[in-house]
Length: 104
Picture 1 (cartoon, rainbow, N blue to C red):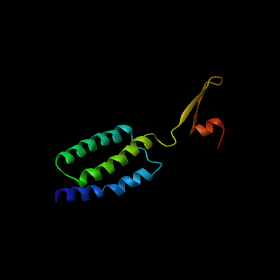
Picture 2: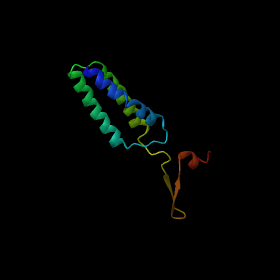
Picture 3: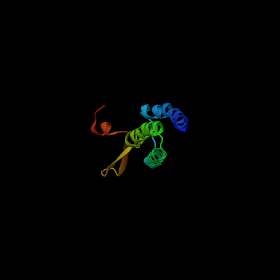
Picture 4: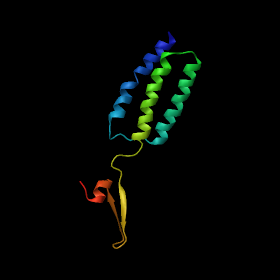
């Protein structure tokens, strides 16, 4: 009974996380997503230790989404890189590496 209730509660979280995973412009600092991963690992261990069956599986899926966010959404999109041009004593900011190499 409790396993089913916890499983349903966790299933409700998945659509919101799926939207985060699919949003290529999303930025979540790695300290936040990493903390979520550590917390979820502890929750999974507690659920398994409590004898739950379905809940740890669903929470593992949620942890996999957070791992994806940690790996692929941990850096701001379009972060600016700076090039220093010593001849003019200026710093030039570019949006990405393609603009640095002259490709578009």
